[in-house]
Image (cartoon, rainbow, N blue to C red; front, side, top):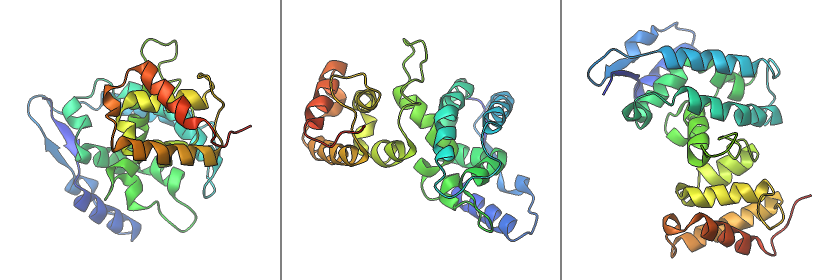
Length: 243
């Protein structure tokens, strides 16, 4: 296992508080190196910084609160995050503190651009403090990890499907999303790839409720791709469809 940089939630919160109060803290005082073997390799991180900077240039210099452009950025960025971090040690990728370090030490300007506002910094949760699933970088990586399909021309097609509300409220925050074939089936439904109509926002919310209830009695992980797709189509019958 190679060494990697990490930052605890407690240290990250202390650093951000000091930063926000204008104290100019030394970031290195809050970072530690974990693991054994070779020194941390920053090449994938630097490549990711460059790639996301190029994507960000396509968007406004500042975003309004609940700006749709923010969700569009995430759609374009998720596959890039996953691809650039593909060769990072899996131990690091499974460590909450690695993702906190990544967001705070390397991508704070991006997090602030995405979630900050005039006179207000991004919430600590956007850095993964208190809730890893809200960490911007981790969330983008997980979005692509869940539905990447190496057999397709664009392996990240499904990851780019759906808006921010679909992903954050009805996939990443839901236990049934751990069953990847269910997640893929849900996205295929919204991408028009199944024999059922795309659902409206209200329909998606109702489908999510049905999946949560069914999850208590059905092991989604044991379903085949066909069974997962048939289940999603069946549950979507009668729900409000989109335009």
